Image (cartoon, rainbow, N blue to C red; front, side, top):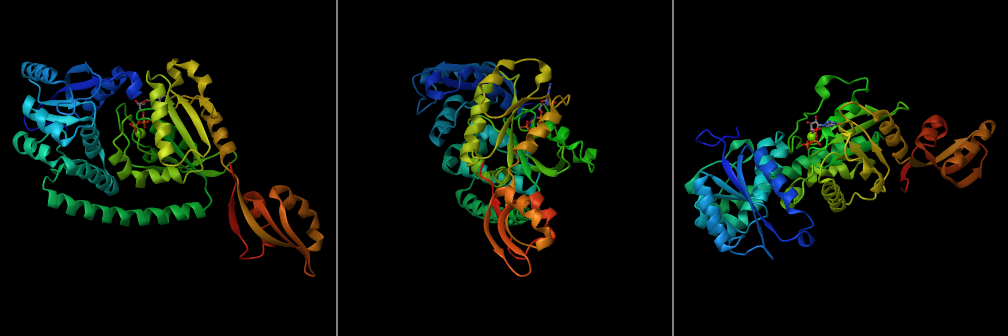
Length: 438
Ligand SMILES: Nc1nc2c(ncn2[C@@H]2O[C@H](COP(=O)(O)OP(=O)(O)OP(=O)(O)O)[C@@H](O)[C@H]2O)c(=O)[nH]1
Ligand SMILES: [Mg+2]
């Protein structure tokens, strides 16, 4: 699946420009290491890595002209098929580099899109990836049509399901239109299901975080205590970037016995292409409707700060920062990275999704952080039950009390618990939900 026509792994050279940490906020070493991992995740063999220090990225060749020639010679010598650049390239840069190097040129974005194209399994996932690929491709068609016709397939040319990506402008526009329509249809179904879930009043807990942090492992461990659990409910776990692309929902049980829904979703990566985030907004919507977020961090990762920041930035983009967030410091069985614990303000907990360490405490924390939903309800209490008034008063406050012949009519906001306990005194049709401010 990941091999090109000649049946060997695509041999790639990765190239980056170091503009200094102040300008890019990511240190170049980490960023290049991640680029290599991404290339491997796409099935390539990384033959070498080149970094040039420059004031800024060159508009024509990305690196300097002399460096471009150097890279070309190295690529000849090392028998490299493809050169991958660490930033998004313009159509003109791709064209120029392709001419200068006589090889397939890719950038970080098209590499990530290619991984997604290979991994997408659901119909919606495939449509979302293809949409992102086409939108990326559209303004770069001149550059692409060149190397596509001459250099054939491999990374960056594959669509979801292995079909070749469209290269004709008119067709691309038509296809984009078509996909957008299909996605809208699927979103309708999704939002209906979501509405049912919200109405069922089951709290939703969403697991978010950097790719490979251990999100799916955590989901699998947290649902094991549910009575309906079976191995078929497990989500795929693997030590690779973007093992998970689509959102899964599972049922779990809180220590107090209440059920909750747990969602696992695509992981984040630094410089995640905006087109991809846009295309995946539908999938990420599930995060928006969660009651609590679990932000999973791999505390053994050297680039933890960058990973934290990336996730928080994306959550900000999704407008999710007002939700309760529990920072879950994962992989503590590896015994590294402990000092970080003190620099996080959000509620936090050290766990091992793998060994199960502290998962009971995490469940307790989740329970504590689920915002209580209050219901604005009108009750009619018989006079011989007037003792219940203090319970109803105790919840959230009372708006009005009227002493009537049949009993005491009270309009109040009460918790789920009170509501279900005194259901028989509720006057039909007076219910509406009030969210607790967190
Ligand atoms: N030592 C250790 N390894 C863990 C732990 N949790 C997860 N892992 C490993 O980390 C790797 C990634 O785990 P996943 O659960 O697939 O990570 P993810 O966050 O879902 O990753 P993506 O879906 O790729 O974004 C796997 O090899 C897991 O076995 C842990 O608590 N301790
Ligand atoms: Mg996963």
